[in-house]
Length: 353
Image 1: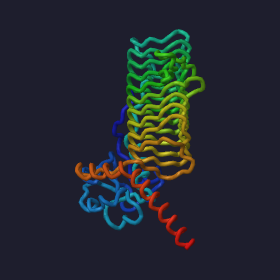
Image 2: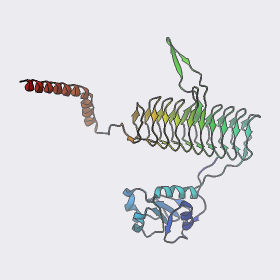
Image 3: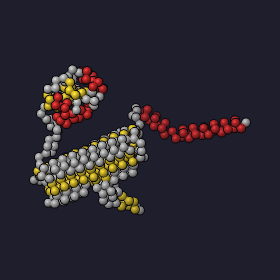
Image 4: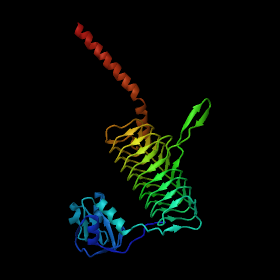
């Protein structure tokens, strides 16, 4: 399966051209790898994106650096100058460390249903199972022990790492990357209470995933109860995320690890959600919203902005004091209201006199 491997060296001026940066210094410097300011050595290129590491710029042993225009004068090393050094680093890293192309073909131990359509340029790994009428697109790579359900569709150049499960009828678009252990299309948590028992509601929808989506290891996305669960183009999902049935995740949204999103929640386009945030079901989150890590969202968010619901960490003794005072806020509010009413009555009596 594809893996990140260092490529042969590239000239610094070539990297500048390909990532849209300006080159200062010796453009013929050969670069083979990326590295951190502290650990980089000869043949490496590093970057300064966070001002707190500026002191390390003077001591780095890298062959070249990526810096913002305001930091260009702080080093005599050959450099790429870019408005956003981190974006430039991402582009350079992609050039220097491209994924290894999968070798087309079907492994002898794979089980492919005769009615499945597997492109000649696709790669099917050991012990993979491809169900009836499933479609595997051009240059797609299906890792070992993956299971592709009946009538499922995998788009061109999409990569599924080992042990990914795609349930029947689910759709994944082009150029997606799904990491090991992800489960796409399991039943949503649909139950009806009947007297003292639970009745399972059939989950008849699908999961439909757009193009250029990345799904982290052990992330689970439930199929819709009636309509489809939808993950739009260029969504980036970290590891161990749970997305419930009938959710919609808008294009270009990024969600960090361990987030839980209950069913029928609609996350807008271009949102950023911190790790371990939790969403109640049937919510609407506006485009461009930022949710801080570990924040609990009970109500819909109609206006974009940064939303935080985390109590900052304190030494335990101080936290207990703060928690105790917080529990008394309702009582304190009632006492303040009572005092305000008494004051208002007193003023009324004075005016009457």
